[in-house]
Image: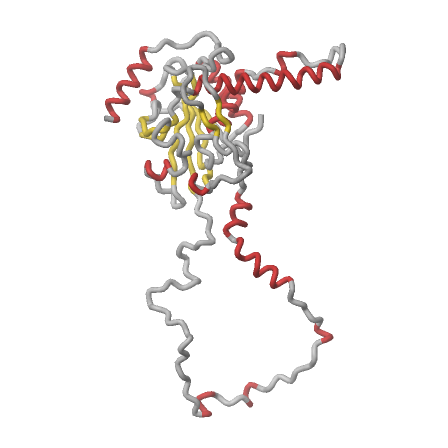
Length: 330
């Protein structure tokens, strides 16, 4: 079934015309040239991303041979989505679309992502009580201590010499032979088990938007199963807008966030960003007055080369625990 579906998608993309005119403000779609410009800007702002050429037989002629898709490797994923319990600080932002369909939900939009130090503190939270107890212990200076005569070890009789028989303590814990020692190198609850992901961005010719792909590894660098990958995807989208499909430039099947509504959502996000930017521009214009150094209205608008930066922010609502966004600042 997957092979038939991939064949259908391939034919559909092949027959689709290449977008030539820029429409990213009007429709949220971008041309291959704009995808390349946005990719170059992403690589410049975040060097962990890089261009790849992929399989020679799968290259698209509307993109440069050395810039077929983008990839960033070993992106950390510290938690599963089900561990992100909602609190009063969490919120959902609904992005309405013009076709009357169900709105796109941006989950945990009010949450600041925890860093690794905060997560480790949470895991080791039970050690805080021990720390408090230790802080209350008074350390007596050595000069203030009473001198204690330490007996000579030779003067202490051995237990065997006294004829004392050691009895079994009924309160002692019987340790089975199959219990792993605390000094063993086995897994520990104190060890943070971190998954990693390779994240891909391709250009979808049919939908005329970028498309995200995911390939995950567990803490031992073993590939994740599709069930495990869905554990790191918001349940509003798992198995709905996120499916397992064949990568357009590689001979492998990956989890992909379907781009059928990317253009509509991106259009709404760009419009909101432009509205906020224009408000700030009007305030700056009043401060500068008639000065020749006053900012221009065009400078307040979202540029097309910033498209992928915004796209990745938008995608974080689908994969909120995959921390690919931590080095991006536009």
